[in-house]
Length: 99
Image (cartoon, rainbow, N blue to C red; front, side, top):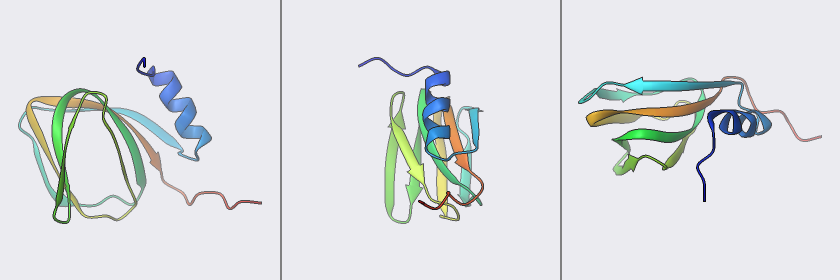
């Protein structure tokens, strides 16, 4: 299976109601201690690796992996020796109600 382009990722995210789509780069050995965001996120790791800890569960993510987080969920991000680049789709407003 081929990896999506950023444009494909963005189109898919917007079709799912995400209103911001960004490419983020985190430096090597960065620790973002417990924090949360006021938006839901769906993301795909493009390069590098990092660990994402939510509660007692830690996921080790690398290129090709995806993850999702609901808004206001406390988590920890720990980036590896090469840092990481990932695409993040954010839902900053409530999802539209089905008609």
